[in-house]
Amino acid sequence: MVDCVVIYVRAIDDSWTLLVKNVHKKGFEGKFWSGVKEHSDVCIPFSLLKGEKLDITHFFGSYDLKYKSLTNYFLSGVIPVNRCKIWLGKLDQFLFNRKGLIRSERMDTLKLILEKTIENKNFKLNESSLATLLHTQKWVFHPDKERQLSYGKLLLESLVESGELIQERYEYKLSAKALNTISDYEDELKKHNQNLA
Image (cartoon, rainbow, N blue to C red; front, side):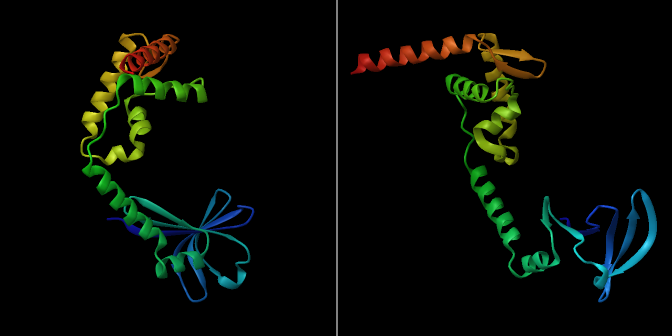
């Protein structure tokens, strides 16, 4: 598992950058760049650092934890808020993986695509983005993800076959016929409910 830290010190006007290799009692030591010119290793004393930008990235597993000051970074070691968020996220993913992925029916999928198309007239999707709409990005780590993608592709292709979607290369978009299909479906549903009453 990856567990390393990268520190950059940058001038306020971005005229120079220091990639920190070591932190000493007196300052930061590392590779120095000014503009596009690379210099040899230098040590910049803390006393000369007044308002420079500090970018600290802690690579922890597949996560990038970012900090803008040494104080924030050291406090995260004492109060590990980000690591707690990571572990809670892993717990949430574990619980999500224990459930089966629910398959969306044609009409539910069509209504979802309609809503997204109303928000963005150029909306297009594929089986991956459909899975994300239905299950958030958690589906990517689900053990049944390949089956979900296969089902999503079949579902989208069936909507193309019946004319509700138009395929453009590897993406799908709503056709005008979809509005009629949804309207007819809702009319039939109302009639059915009235017959039951």
